[in-house]
Length: 144
Image (cartoon, rainbow, N blue to C red; front, side):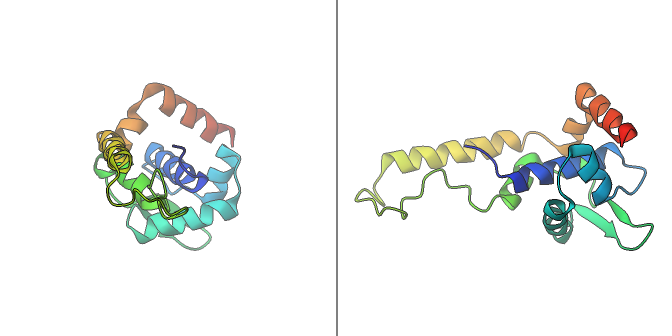
C-alpha cells in the first residue's frame, strides 16, 4: 500500500508547521523546502484548514500554523482524512463472485484497521520531537 502524494504533502506540511510553532509559515516556504509545487500544496492546505488542523491567515503577512496542539494530531487520522480511499482491494472494479463472503477481503480490512491503529499511536508531536527529523527540518528552513 502506498499513500498518495496528497497525503504525503499533508503530513509534510503539518510536520513543518509543528517544527515552527512560534511563527506563521507560508506555502511558498514549504514548497521551497520540500521542492514541490505551491499549487499542489494549496489543495492540501485548504483541506487541512477546513478540518481544523491548520489555522491560516490571509494577506501579505499571512501564513499558517497548527490549528490544534501537535500532541492531539494523530498521524492515522490525517492519513484517513487525506486518502481518497483506504480500500486495499476494490471488489467492485471487476465484480467478484465471492463478494460478501470473502475471507480475503475481511483479512485485508483487518490489516487496514491495524495499519491505521498503528499510525494513530504516533502524534505530530512525536514526529516533530524526533531529533534527526527536527534537525533536518531546521536545516531546510534555514537554507530556504
